[in-house]
Length: 356
Image (tube, rainbow, N blue to C red; front, side):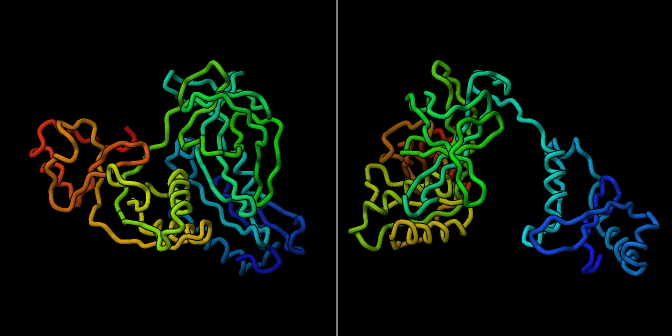
């Protein structure tokens, strides 16, 4: 509503408009701040535009009043309007983001809360991404530093594997640019090369500390497909691709107990993940896939079994599967099947969560 000469961002908390004088794209613009009911608004953009602007701002009144405590408590999400392409609204967004963001908070481990101001370094792996650089087929593990100071080439301890390691090429990223960092602090995110050691939810500490941060919940997949490579000569690429994409958390892979990895069962939360998986297998690993839908829409972890799994009495449309951690699970097509399974297999216990 401000025309071509001005672009404006409404700050509802302050009840003011922050105007940007339009200049050549890519260059810093001049700005001016004015209250919505200030008569100077008409002098700046004209009476008609000022009236239209006030009317449009009224339309924004459908939302809740701004409450910083609600924002920090995670019950209210502020919304910003802007465009990085035209540099419209970027600067006020960054300023408000810094103002609203809290300092790094302490994190809970299996040995209690770890103080963010502790001098001992610790970090939590929250993301793994393969093939970020197609020329090198690299694989990066991203970790958030939870306490202390990280220093390049210092010896650290990977709790899940019990191994000591040196992270010699820690990186921080800005868009497509990468930069090797010498040190980082609590709240920072760094990426390190992963030889296949890390998994989402892992903890890295200083030697001598063996606590584990609470992991990220694993959601039960709701859609399943049987997957195999069209070209059997690409078995190695198929296994590598499915395992790496599964370790990123994009999919979950299972197989029949005792079977190999020539054919796997892929489980996802949303069907779009199948399309992404199929595209990445072709683009990044050169593998075309056969994909066949399966009738399962529920999965339960077997925590206690009264007999050999092959002797369990299963209902129609169910199957016993094994995940990459060699845990046994039962897949089935409806919640009623749980009652059937436990009734016909006394002593069989099924967990509600895959994160057990």
